[in-house]
Image (cartoon, rainbow, N blue to C red; front, side, top):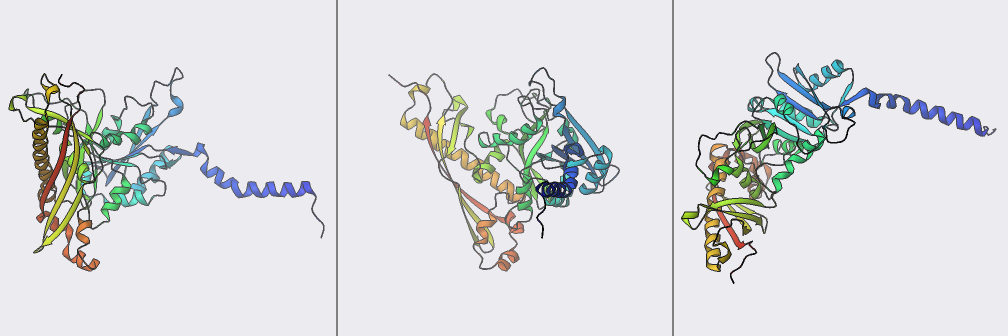
Amino acid sequence: MKILPKKIFIFIIIIIFFMAFSSSYTALSIDNIETVVAIGLDVSDYNKLKISFQFTNSSSVSESGTSEQSPSIIYSIDASSVSSGINLMNAYIGKELSLSHCKLIAISEELAYQGISEKIYTLINDAQVRPSANIVITKCNARLYMENSKPLFENLLTKYYEIFSNSSKYTGFSVNATIGDFFNSLVCKSCEPYAILGGLNSEPNNSDTSINAQKDYSGKANNSNVEGELGSENMGLAVFNDDKLAGELNSIETLCFLATKNQIDGFLLSIPSTDQNKGYTDIYLTPTANTSSKVEIINGTPYITIKYRFSGRIYSIDSDSKYLSNDVLNNISDSCNTYLESIFSDYLYQTSKFLKSDINGFGKDAKKLFLIDDEYNEYNWENNYKNAFFKVEVDSSIRSSLLLTET
């Protein structure tokens, strides 16, 4: 057998290479795809669903510098399902939609009250949709929310959608909720799903002119005290019972959720002052240990004990602050413990008695009390959580953060 000349051998290899990869190259060509950065789902007046797709055209950013944001483009379509809507949009724009860089899924609360399991299953089953995409339940139209999502300090909308939820770690006023986490909780029998609560930054209601520090912690999306140029806002928590929206939590209740779930690094809180003439004392609290929980079932009723541990620093300053004694600090610690026990208890009973949703996943502790899964399933934790009783224990050690000392 003769050995092929070297040039003929190389030519054959090149032909095989082009034949093998020419079709995939054509399919994946950047000219044939359009990247979606956000998807919005609303109730449609004409069909089952209105789907909005948001794109950014980074190539059209002004050449004068990087200070201008890349423009956003939104197209909406009425369809019977998410998959059908994607297919129709492919035909409309003449390109294939790519969801591999989709950073946000926005769903209107109107649609969420009807149930969204079918939409979640469809999106999570798409290999292009990343589980890390944020999920937001909007108190307005989902398309309107996306139209008003105009970051102030980021040039790229995708970057804003990716990082805005990180503030939950140091404020506690919102959460980091992804579609992957939502899906896992949806199929779990020991916990319930939750999502970021989003809305529009409307004019704050200033009819009540009284100064009350607690007003700072009662806000949520569409009803905050913030005035600014940011069109949309994310504050609070959307609570689900199975795949249907059960209700929402405000800022301080969201903070309690994060502290119970060990998902917060620290937070500022205004507690009633030990001196009635001073109103409230600002304290920055940092967890010193993971929040622990213990579930007991007595005569069929869940009894849940939860322990919180914090270290706190006083941030409020007045003329007497530099003279804080150990006795005063101990009194402030006691006041802080009492106040925290109150707000944590209110939050926990809010989830069980009114929302009937175990978003903190206490069912995972309850499941350990049963020998086999069938016994746990027969107990029906989702239904029994509404009968739960809670015992809250808080230990906070408060210190002064002031540099001023008595001389």
